Image (tube, rainbow, N blue to C red; front, side):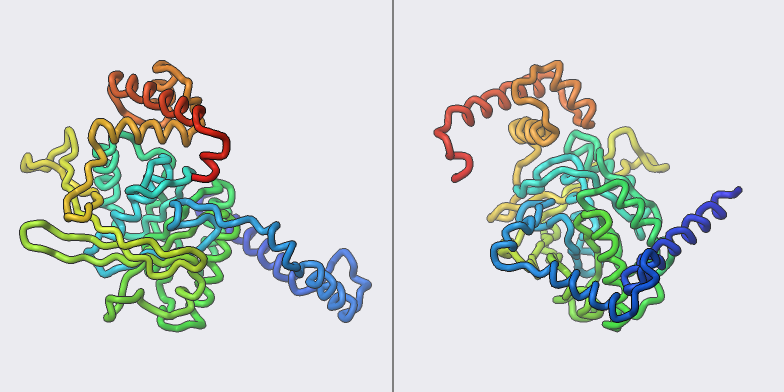
Length: 374
């Protein structure tokens, strides 16, 4: 049997499962065929009454779990948008890499977890971008799985994607871009985009991940393009703008356009840094290059986060996130760094060991309750 035939059979099976669930939700109960329509209705009324919560029961609802603290959250729908040329895909890849590797994202702590990235456009450039990030940060982008093609949200194959993400249980799923997975859909129609929102919500619910859409602006560059039905469903919306200044290069600004249940972050500014990839050259001998984003401070200068001290702290944070004991010696740290794809010299790892032990001793010497009430 050929691979396409297998895929078609799987899609047919998933559609059958979805239809069966829809029939069950409609009130038809194949296990109790003797019940009348009124009895079915009364059962559903009773079930909904049992779902109602009083004020005390609200405390049983789990709070949102952050993916990037104060910015993105698991089990929510989010979007990052901006005009073409604002490097929003570079920013999104940077977020994906930091979440997957447990690295701090430009001062914002992350909760590490797997990432699924749908590269629905710009496929030929993704390898260079990943290699530039890895070279700049001195570690592999472990934990990110790339799907190098779009999956249409209204196609039966979307059900396959839902099942893949359900099995992988990622912390973050990125769809880059929204337009490339909604081909043929009238994006200015609230009714058509409402169906797309439902498809996105199915993926979010099945995976428990933060589903982050990458999108463009329209003629009005101050807002995301298309129907408002999508924005209404978002937990978080982030806007990216670009301003070119002579002699200093572009300044990329990230703004929190919507944060449904939390305070909005202050604006964050970034510059671009060119990276010449080690050991790679074009046919004419010129270096193969890509870029990464660097955070700018209040004076517009790039913040130094890749220096020696910063590297020690980043590696220590990654080991903490991976559950490596703070008392681990250099052989253990070296082995765990190799497993996590972190590249560092032995001298750096020795400082990482000392840094982690000193931090652990400092925490242990604090009075009870200090960490809980900073």
